[in-house]
Amino acid sequence: MVKIDVVSGYLGSGKTTFIKKLLNACEGEKVIVIENEFGEIAIDGELIKNEGFEVYELQQGCICCSIRSNFIEALSSIMDEFKPDRIIVEPTGMGLLSEIIGILSLPKIKQISEINSLTTVVDAENYLDQIEGFGEFFKDQVKNADKIIISKVQFMNYQEIDKIISSLRDLNTDSLIVTQNWEFMAPEEFLEILDNVPEKSGKIYRGNAESAMADISSIGLEFTDSFKEKDIENIISELKSGKYGHIMRGKGFLNIDDKTVEFNYVGNACKLELLNTKKDQKICIIGKNLEKEAISELFNNL
Image (cartoon, rainbow, N blue to C red; front, side, top):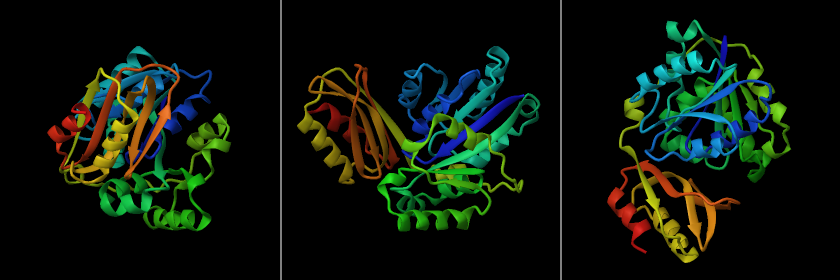
């Protein structure tokens, strides 16, 4: 039987980073990653491919609803063609875990695979704000998880972490909650978390995918010319202003003054990480009520 590990979590929570660390512990196993990105431009899949791992990408929709049939087909073909030991599924940050459980429980999938773990990654820095604004996603992802991994704990104090744990326990009393700083965890510890088998109640909390994703869309942009540092500072400031819609997530690669950076925008904060290799410039912006034409002009008319 093929093990299936689902790693869910809201936009920018750290799912891809968690998966990269997990993959480093899977030596000796044949592992395939199914990467589902909401936007038309793939970013996370490229980050995993750069580490030398096999990635099957599903784009322009959510595997729990609009491209459900693509996901079912992908699972079947991967198992037939590659015969992996383990499949790691990273749904889009707006995916409902309950819907994915339903797909993995279909007879044609269940007879050749087993759900090994249902993990939700929670962003400690933005959790309490995001659960108020996007509760449908959070409740579904948290209530249906058997493991909850809190990311970015190094930026929070003990009282703040306890508040997050209390909120999580209100939604899920049974799951394993991990609050350890990832920087101090060995690769095999990530695998141990997934392969730990907690008691399961068998209950599934079902959210509403259509209502949860109402008014949410994405825009993908590609560029040839490099940016100036002051241009990016202005773009970030403008995105925070609210004039372009509610920006929930931004990610991609940009060349700034002949240097390539990874662009990460989450919770009204932006991080630029210097990369050692050149990449094609591309950005994906996800949000509510996006002013797509204005966003395109913001990046292109500098």
